[in-house]
Length: 254
Length: 254
DNA sequence: CGCGTTCTTGACTAGAATCAATGCATGTGG
DNA sequence: CCACATGCATTGATTCTAGTCAAGAACGCG
Image 1 (cartoon, rainbow over the protein chains, first blue to last red):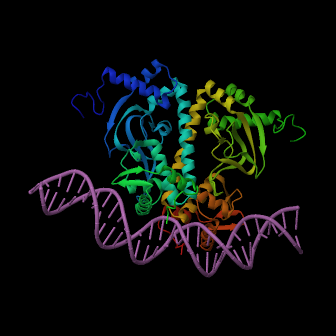
Image 2 (image 1 turned 90 degrees about the horizontal axis):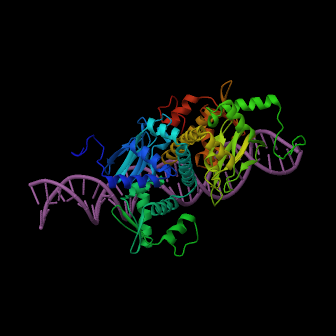
Image 3 (image 1 turned 135 degrees about the vertical axis):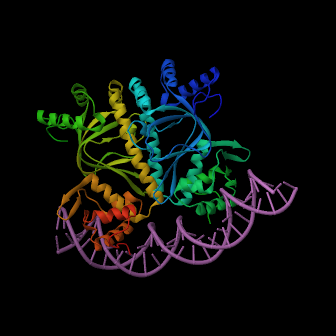
């Protein structure tokens, strides 16, 4: 892609850069517990890839052949049904693995991985990641723990979807996003990623209209303040009250 | 519990019985690929437990301290929210593992495991299963593959819940149950587990009333035939048509 | 046989989807 | 710099799916 690259999609790397990435690798939950040499071995068998906002690491239905470790940016995993109705499963950030669960099972990717803000990743082939796991059993265990955690979280959201009203689901989605991508600004917590009404709808299993109405109400009640694809949480307590069905300090809905 | 047992909850075991269980262990996806000696070592560090219909292996929120491998019967995993609204996550049967995902993460059980038809299981402590995984890395890999598969399946159902209408969700639930617990009888496939309207509702995120109406319609159209807590699928093709939104041979709904 | 479940059906309601029209930013090119 | 196109957001009107509540029937068990 760039002139300095010897191969397509492979970024050049200075010594410092390499060191930095090694540190990142050491901190990534998937590689935790590996020795320095083991990390280097893993790193040496990876390539690097940069994907810009709006592009995809992979699409749902493609043969799963790669494992990615995000070294920057944010990615969302989406699934789409036959009628074209889309759902956002989760957001991933720096240090998160992409495609762990499939690279070793000869499956197709069950979701698409769309970049929300310009991102970079380390890439391994399925075979290579399999070799690494055989050599360093620690990796399988790490992977198991990771998938287990994501599984539990998905289970919780599944129950939410099955039992809770839309307003509460949206409140919870915002609170989760705040944890993952919240930066403190004057007057609240800014969700540091582009977030349209449509996105929120796809995260909560509803429509952009319903989300819009809810947000309008909340803006009236000074729980949040929004502008196009931006959102600041101004009153986390109230929002939590809605999310958890606690008694509210001030009436908001209606 | 029984006089012949030396310890509570531990069943007596004849030589043949032991052989049979060893075979079952060898076939269980989680233990696949282990050598005879390794299997014996695993079996030797397990105890056995029997749990009757209506009782629980564990409850949501308890500290996860055990890993179970079902050697008979059926279990369902349920989650309940603060208001008491319950959701059935999945059904497990012989050879399936129970609590893999938590026994090694010091989490609380995110679901309850309720026995639907009298069941037996092998039991390991969390520490022991952790040791086994360290000694036999193959186990971590097996575990990872298993959880990965369950994860994908849950993702699919999540999307279903977010995007599909109730009728289709119920149709899919029945088809899944038929795959898992279907026995061919004259005139169709009997779902070989007690299955109330309430159960179906909890599997599909709806109410027993809506399920009842849908089942009545289907019974009229000869897609299924039901009696109290029993169900026979008579026209799988039509049911699949509803589940997949294929054109229907005969109009059913409305 | 009586009792407790489970199941059915009807009437009514409400939460949320759908559809349509319009307003508001943002970025673009003449 | 303005006119315009485009995509995002708001709001209202309407419809409809599915939930709620109530009453009673059917079934199975002790």
